[in-house]
Length: 122
Length: 107
Image (cartoon, rainbow over all chains, first blue to last red; front, side, top):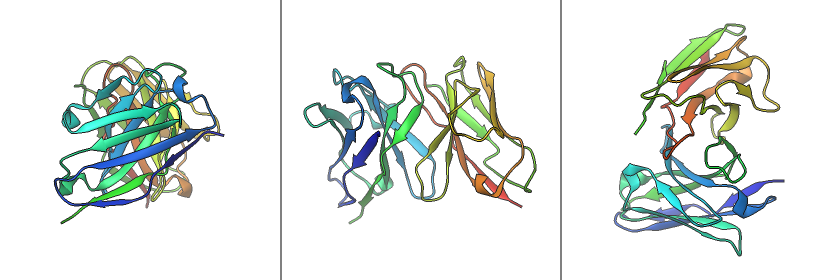
């Protein structure tokens, strides 16, 4: 069965960086794109970007350009999201989420990680 | 970037009521539109994709329609377990924007 298991909660100070991991299992890792989506407390879902685990290409939301980096390690079937220059407004639950369509980024999300709470506080 | 605007932002309805949520895209997106349900403390769940295709296992009281810029999610007979926030998402081209969400409560 498809599973996306994310790393644990993080507490960071303003200005620091955070790197969240998402380990995939139960399917061919390189065949399905992966999104990163975040949700601030009591707020809606916010799309951050997408990575192609096969070639490593990425597309980021304009809001996060220059601050976010998405990478992958095919040897461990893991994708990573690193967000730098953290501020209090970045406090949120961060999700990895798999695109449902085979080798195609234009598909809905069918599986989500459990979420990683990142708290930014001095 | 294409913006996705949902309405209303919240609604309260009685059990058995028909509930309709709308999602409008700032530019045409054909039928590249999904609807998700998120219950409190849970991850989102895919309900509908391609604007009107019901995801496997989703109750038939949920339906979707629309194409281009205007889309709707309908719950034909609201049930207590449908209390949740509902999000639309476009998934074509280079951005995968979500609507701001519609919170559905029982009156």
